[in-house]
Length: 521
Image (cartoon, rainbow, N blue to C red; front, side, top):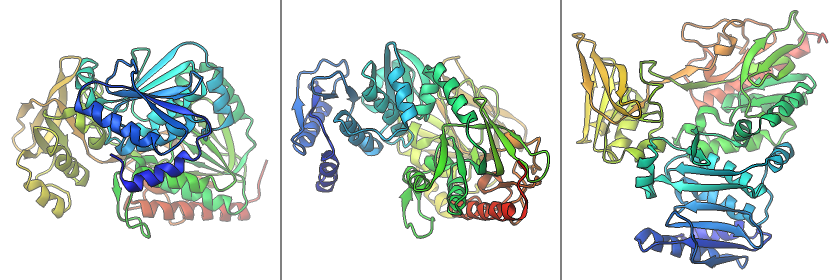
């Protein structure tokens, strides 16, 4: 199953294994079990520190455990981790094999201090680009603390289990058999849910931070560029990073980032983080800003209060919080979120195989979603609010070739309906005659654009009618010493390459401000 190129790549990684490990398989008589057996044998042949074993007793078949010899350290994969999960496999092999994970020492200490019984199960899809973050985070936690176990399960391989647990969205995590989380999470966010004492220690540590010259809030393309440009000036730089890459992480193919002919969002996000970490930048990960407190006089310190209650101070602040996927804001949407209502066709599409679904939105993202889903589901109904589709013509032409897609124009979604457990349909209104009709579908993919993440500064800065932070040509906001960049601002054309440039511009403007305005402690 591994190509020659993948074998060469994997053999190079496996040279970093320090301790002997085994691949213990639990197999059945089906074709997937045969595939897994061959797959594991291929891997074991690439390193003399790996042996293949049969006769495992895991309830999931096919599955395999990666175990460190003579220890309780290990992780489990129920399914063959290829696609987006291949990187999860590589990291698991290395970490179980004794190669230290690259996490902060404080996080490691928190993981080691956890007591009790924890068995995590993560359902993933091989086409999901959000799933590896969760799988890798939980694998790392379980490798560091053997009292914590983790099983990563390919939902497509166990459809009956997925149906019994009513899983319609991935990544979905269960802890000790009970729902734990849905969607992307990193180590810090997982620890926040299971280690309340650690939160208090983290807040205390952040409160002890000395004031920054520049504090960047946001870690997408604009935030990363801003942090790098400030740090290169030799200034004390901090970055509040909820997740590196921002909405870029949820983008599949990227072909218009100049000098990079083709890449994927998760890879670009990883490169942004690596670039930031090359500089002396204080990275405060998995943190979200909740309140902005401007300085009482020009030149004094501004303050950002985080959701966990921590306070950070800085001479200048650059806001680069980007935008989030827009919701329909109709009755039933929140009730059936992850139980029929979805926002990522790549991640969740496979769970609607053979079903009838709808897509809300006739722009590029909506039409692309309809095209992708048409190859998986039985039928797609595309609902467009206006009388015309707004997607690029090449996408509209492609859509017309899909025999199982119906386009309804002048259609406004009114509410989502279901039986209380899962979605069964939606009600839409015809804008031309005002009539309402019910559409029986088992899923709805919402693709109607983005909303700027500016709620936390609306009472401090000038905000446009569209919810964007108003800035001038130098990325200055209406408060001296506070700047903004990227998709959260009024700058036109929300593109990655523009966000990077705006982040650099905001950093240079902040530097210029600090040169000209005397600091008041």
